[in-house]
Image 1 (cartoon, one colour):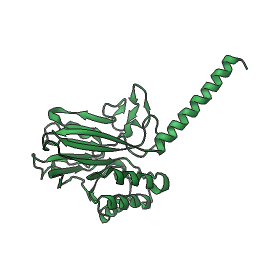
Image 2: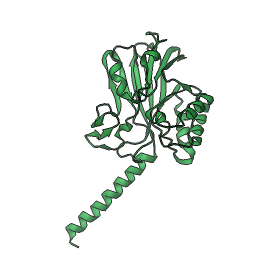
Image 3: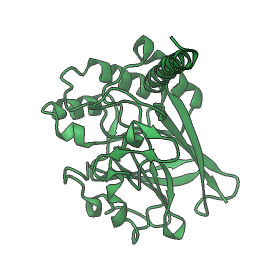
Image 4: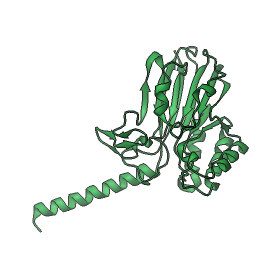
Length: 274
């Protein structure tokens, strides 16, 4: 074999191995994505934190999620939100997800959930919803709840999945007070076009998986509901009047069980008074 050919073959093998290692890492090891949002609705120096887990799709990390749960405990967020697709549409056994939920509620009893499209596509969704309620999770499909966090009134709104036409934002907003700091949980970011004239401060979404597979300088190739090269694929998107939409790229996978250049993640959102 000529030296040039040998070099190309060896380089190709090493590149393929590197890609496979990266895929395994991004799919099976999670990270924490922190970011901060400032608001005048909180007094200067005050703050609270929200831990968002989205699109778990019944995924179980090593040791029955022990490492993930230890990280949740360490982060010590004021509120935990689950923004849909806790299970996959093919899920038929709920023991893993119920174990995860029981441990999350032990860590923090303030756990809130809204449904995603995979819940609505799954015939055992009512069993899931009943099980979440029985374990202390607050289901916020087209509902709201106001709590006090860090001496601040926080209203958490939720809508059922928008893409399967179960969302009712008007109903969810019925008990809102415009002076409260308000967070909307919506599995799909597609609802963002409805938010411009509302007093909602930040919307937390998932659904896109960040594309699951991303390319350098391009980002997501495709995302559900948005098609190729989506505009709302991952990250924080400023809107008018100091409002934001945040799209979490999620914990699990669906269709193809891989991630590439888009590591599994949970998000830690810190709301800070200015």
